[in-house]
Image (cartoon, rainbow, N blue to C red; front, top):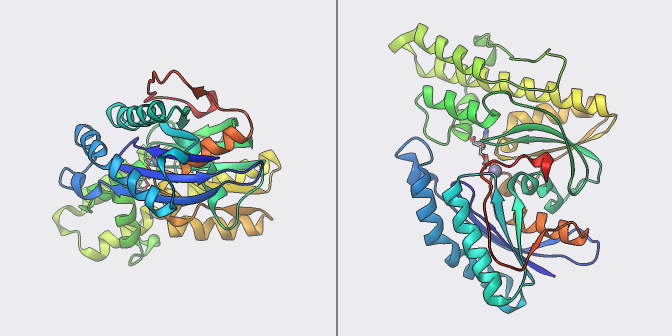
Length: 343
Ligand code: KG4
Ligand code: ZN
């Protein structure tokens, strides 16, 4: 079975082909991605209307590209999968519309996929895939969640952010420091030159006794430090503040992930979503989980941020288990707000 996956929920157009055989872990045949980062950077963040228009321009050329790379044809596709939500409504509509039109033209089923399910299953395409059950730490630009994952489609939410997501905390504090969009990678690069101990920043909800997160207070603390220094803030101060901010976010994520492992008795942690690319987070999680006798699984770096491969993969894994909502009518909707636990 060959599955085409189309991702267009935010500022990346991703297309990929995955092959699924019997009950084996599906394999990636080809993938192509266009990031809109450069286009949005002039505005300091994603402009939804520009995002939708760019997805329209990119999606078919990217589809042709993956077909060529995989040495396959449209007729060999068995299922067309797309991101149904959550995400930007207009952006989602582009992927959903193209996927359903393509599926109708090919007389093959279409399948809407949850974006976070894609992130969560993406480590199955890595050289070191996990086994079920595991705890998943989902850390993207829009979500920060801890889930218990017993199988595909069996997700229990253990805790989530009550305000900003971890990626948002990276992006917003980076913006305050005058760093370019997207702030996460820029702040991480700057942090490498700083001393995290130079600033004492709060670790919100670290000892709340539950698995929820909060990052908006941290943002305010960073703002207060910047205001205190006014125009005198030098590059070293900024690097120190970047390192302290990263350390505060990572400390909370690591602390709560370990608490979730302890509470569940599980020994496998899967980290997914854009912030999962953060090196400091990976080092801290690896060290602390090793001490606790747990293993950490990550997606390949290229599959940490949004991509089509994770969408094709999630569709493939659902189809293998007979848990897919196949669409043969080709009428479609998108779900900009869609809790993963309800899938
Ligand atoms: O999963 P993703 O690509 O898109 C969403 O679904 O949101 O995540 C994007 C988020 C952004 O907030 C970005 O700043 C953050 O992931 N990010 C990082 C790093 N790379 C991406 N944050 C910290 N360190 C990184 N290396
Ligand atoms: Zn994402």
